[in-house]
Length: 79
Figure 1 (tube, rainbow, N blue to C red):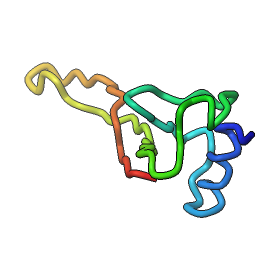
Figure 2 (cartoon, rainbow, N blue to C red):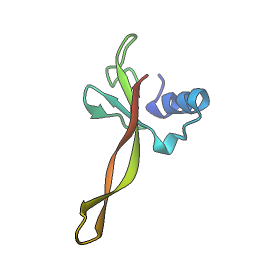
Figure 3 (cartoon, rainbow, N blue to C red):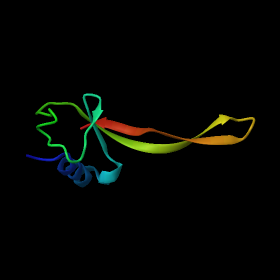
Figure 4 (tube, rainbow, N blue to C red):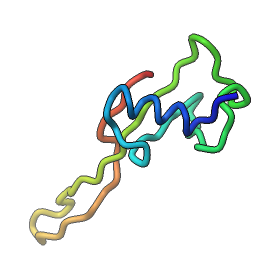
């Protein structure tokens, strides 16, 4: 059966998004590259979310001028 890494490669080919940037979420859990698609419970019609993490800079305390790096979700879509 197909591995999650193979699914990510298909997404790379279709959307031109490098596989290391891809996070696939199913039922609230991130899918591991080495997992088997069928064993993870994904079946035809299942909702799997593609999430692209992005690092953003947020100025938490403007009066001090300190900035903090926060990793957050930059973009997501159902695949």
